[in-house]
Image (cartoon, rainbow, N blue to C red; front, side, top):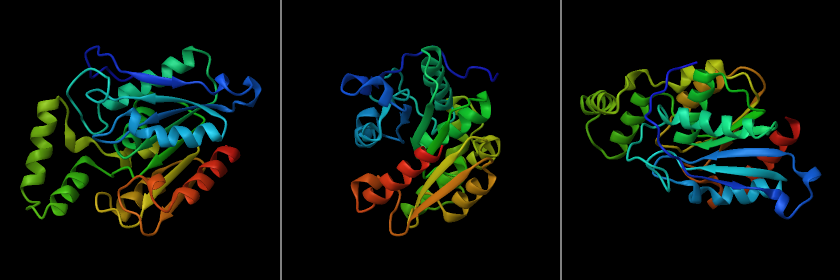
Length: 244
């Protein structure tokens, strides 16, 4: 068991139970949904809508400092991993058995770290565009702004980690992936300027267990459901859940 990084804070979640409109025996499980950086649970309602159509309950989470949760801090998945564990444990203690984890960007990274740190055992995970390391994603954002990467990216990672109480250079989802043994579906946009193909391929190669990757050729670091890829996304998710 890893030590707790956080003081006790309240995180706000929405548990949307499909049983309200459909017979219990048609519900296949529960999917916990985690948003990305600068998002919140309400920004994930389009995912909720698709999962409900596939006969799953949903549990939408606001990370600390987002939406209705307490705090004013974000650590791009490092400390948020503990909130993934909190949500997973909450549903497990309620008797939920078929639990899947879905996360986009920072949410995907939080899932990878939570499983790596705490040994969570979901039925499967669905992750969109996780970055390979804190340093590489910071460098990418500096390049996107046409700002000098060296030495500014390294300084930001160093001081940002110090101010938030962790060693940010050690925040490496490519390493967390090595401890993932459950079925995994990885999404990636081929034109993503925040996450490179090399990072994505390394994460995918490091995953253990059954895995599949869906690449959208002309998508960037974006919500795949809001563009022309919605049908492909739904088909890939449906296939993954049916097979696992």
